[in-house]
Amino acid sequence: MQEKIEKILVVDDDAAVVDIISDVLLENHYEVFAAFNGKQAIEVALNEQVNLIILDWEMPVKDGIETLIALKQIPDMESVPVIMISGRMTSIDNLKQAFEAGAIDFIRKPVETVELVARVRSMLMLSNYYKESLRKKDWELTLLAKTNHQNDELLSELIAFINKMYQTCKDIDEDKFNTLRSMLNRLKANINNNSWEQFEYYFKNVHPGFSTNLLKAFPKITSEELRLCYYLRMNMSSKEIASLTNREIHSIDIARYRLRKKLKLGREQKLHEFLMKF
Image (cartoon, rainbow, N blue to C red):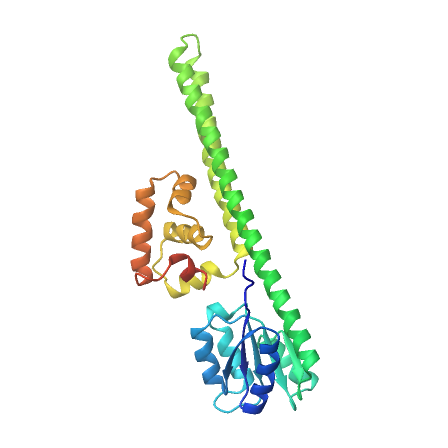
C-alpha cells in the first residue's frame, strides 16, 4: 500500500524564503504548494486539500493574521494546522494574537531546517491523530444508532408476540392484556425518543456546530431533513438509514434527492463530502 504524501502550502512574499522552505520539505518527501501573498494562499486552499500551512506574518495584499482568519472561515480548512513564521512579530502579544486567530505553532525567522522539519512532523502527527480520533467517534456513533435500532426491533417483536398470544389464547383477561399492550407501546415510544435524544446529543458532541452552521446556510431545512443530514454526515448508505429509521430504501432515496435540490448541489457533488464542510 502506497504511503500517503502530505500536502503543505508555504506562504511568504519573499520568494527566497519560499524556495528554502520548499526545498527542505521536498527533501523530506512532502508535496509543496507556494503562494506569495494572502490572496494567493486562499486561492490555493480553495482548490487543493492541503494538510498543513506555513504562513508568513508580514505580507502585502493580506497579512498573515488576516489570511489566517480568512482561511479558518473556509469549512474544509478549520482543522488544517497553520504554523506562523516571522522575523519581527515575536513578542508574547504577537504570539497570543496568532494563536487566537487560529495558528497552532510559531517559528521565528530565519528558519532553522531541523526545527522546521520537527515542527512540521509534529503538527501533521497531531492533525492525523485528531482525524483518526474523529473517525473512531463516528464509528461509535454509528454503533450507538444501530444498537438503539436493535432494541427497538426487539421491543416491536415482543409487542407482536403478545398480540398473537392474545388472539390464540381464550383465557387471557382482556383488560389486563390491553393495559400491558398500552404500557409496552408507551415504553416503545419512550425508548424511541430517548434513543434519538441520546444519538443527537452524542452527535453534537462529536461534530459541534454542524447543525447550527448548516441551518444558518440553509434555514429552510426541516427537522426530518436535518436528521437525515446527521446520518449522511456519517457517510451512511440509504440502506443503512432505511434500516435505522424503519423506512423503505426508495423513500430514503427520494428524501436524499429532495435534500440535494434544497442544498443546490450539482450532479458531481457528493452529499457526504458537502456536509463534512459544516
